[in-house]
Length: 315
Length: 123
Image 1: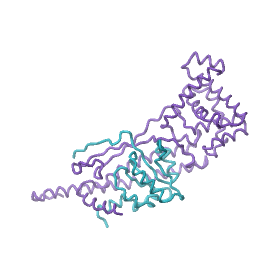
Image 2: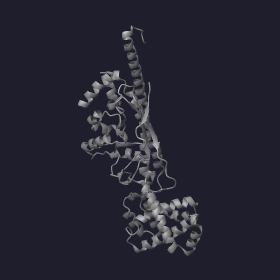
Image 3: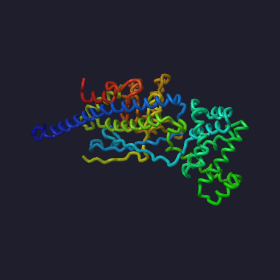
């Protein structure tokens, strides 16, 4: 396409070439952009469909169930490519391109369950230990969890958790016990007014202490002694240490799976929705990268760009 | 062409989302949501009760924040604050329009493509 001309217009020819090349690149990028948009739409549609299915099984899902202390587990690393010499002073000018890469924070090991999770299993355990009447009250107290899940589905899961905790492997037990305990240290003294509930709580606590002593082989001798004494004074101080450790870990926040906001037994549709939205997120990042390339970057096209930008800015 | 890649922020930047409740729930499940120490969220649920001014304010806030790299905005919401979206011409944060639950993606409304049209000179 380049026609060799006299030296004076040689520059202009290469400029035109560069412009043309950029134009073609920009058009290609736009085509990819549109294709990615269709792909994103598909993924979003599937994600929303799974979400609707989950809503159908577990009741309404909405803002009320968002946890208040979330930290993003997905972040973007931005790296910029400086445009060639044209605008040396501006590193973030509109002539430089940026590329985004997705970074996932490593998920913390085990179940560092957020409060909501503990609330669900705790209220379920309550409902189980103290028959029916008491079950409603804790469910009402921990009002942050969706009312649709009170008693009902959680009850069976909670009941299974107690004995399962005693049988499970050490790490799993500790994780589950942490889940159960996460909420107790928050709620005890503030939640239950009922005497019967308090007894049930004590019983559960004793069971849990025993289970945990079995699991944590660390304090081997101390553990054996505590388990034989049935979790008396020794158990109390150990429990305090454990609670402190747990509080420290909870403060670290982050890394916990937002899936747990919706309880322990989430419908599989919700997990699917999570996966689909994660895929949609990746497509979004690709789209953002493409969008950077659609806009021409060179100064020559930048002449027109500057004109339109001022026009747009004046809007 | 010499290209030096500078990492602007080593810590990783966030995404902001302005969309309807279900879409936001989905993205929050995927791990996008963040509430910082000042209780500032990086998402805004837009429903029929949200006023245009609130939306515009949130958008401008997200655009001014240093730690947000990409703003995902559903097209429905974007058309409500079209003027603010088009006035935004900083490369960071990048604004990306996503299809919303009720209306599919419409290329004629995407402000990015409108800008390209202007630049390329189509009329």
